[in-house]
Length: 505
Image 1 (cartoon, rainbow, N blue to C red):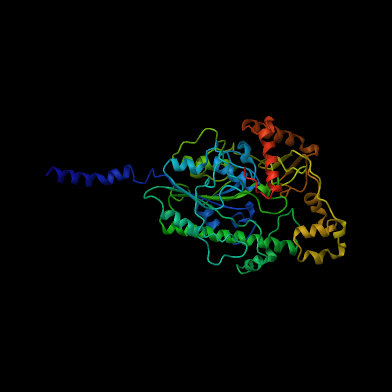
Image 2 (image 1 turned 180 degrees about the horizontal axis):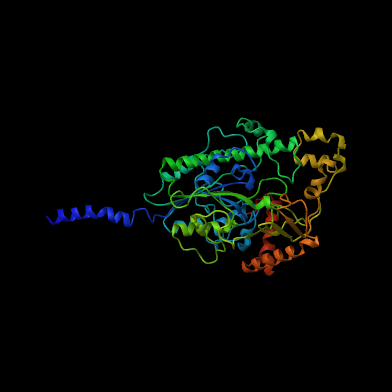
């Protein structure tokens, strides 16, 4: 009798208990980072500059939050990815600040922190790298246990052939019951080399090559549009893979409580973008959805950076954020119902680079500060302009014929002094000064350096001081002068490159 009464009471109060404390109310979210390789922010149609078909990204933006000022820490893949994994600016990571070096174990990485908290973690495609894996560095599983064995039976030319969605399903099938998961989808595309006939496949999507958008710092010629089309097809291809990941989440009933972050590691592989100090090198597509907890359909203009992503994920998962992470959680931005500028102090970002494959005396190291209107660049070495071989020059009257099919590299080799290239010549072939300043409102393509314009002196000095203050706050060796590790690592990576990247000790 007492047992029956107890059961009756339980049934009477169960709805109230469930209302007060739903079973999944505090359930940590699943997390997916979907990151492409070499893609600037405006390439995705959600931003309104391009009409390239990217419906999956547009869906994430529509059903979540679209960020208009999302930045990587460096315009180079390994330091960019290291920054995302550690929640720190790339310059805080010692050898991790360099492509082709290593990521020291002293800096905890997001997947390990989540694994310790009970998450099932894994990755497919490209994780951190390229680089080496010494004993005191993170291993090949720094983005989680790798799942790369499943491949398309007939991969498209120029693509990795990895079936990202199939590997994701395999990962999910190995997940312990009731465990949340973290999965890194490191899409290799649109990294080159690209298939020469990609532009023809792009035509089949209904996107004619005549309409291919060309950023204003490049000449808009048929040959360059075709070269761009070959890249853009792989961005479309990557978007198809995102659609497959979304489909798996829906089929597995996991989408509602999944924090899905879609971005790219650095800018498109074109001049004045990837590996450059300019906005196209570090300004990334960024859309985030979490249907259960993030109000949808919003556009947020706050400046956010790759170091902010790790603390955001950890806070969302209820995991303590380690000391030393310089990024700031964006969870308040995600869960706000506001649009536009939400947190006024997120009004600038500092990015930079130490090395991207050059040999001394050429040196691409720099830091850039970008605010709502201006960008100030400090190049740490003056680099000469590109050498020109007069034996390759063609008469200017042949320019139009050459431009019909020549990619940018060939066009510059054959017609560097053509009048049609005059507006681009300094930007593409000229020397790089120690300081640069651009008004992105008046000059969005950063073609007119205002550093010596007295009307911009106050802006220059203000940004320069603000950047230096942030560098000191985050122990940037370029500001503190403690350059020993950077100098040794630069020698190491140059030596690796001379040896065909075979050096691993």
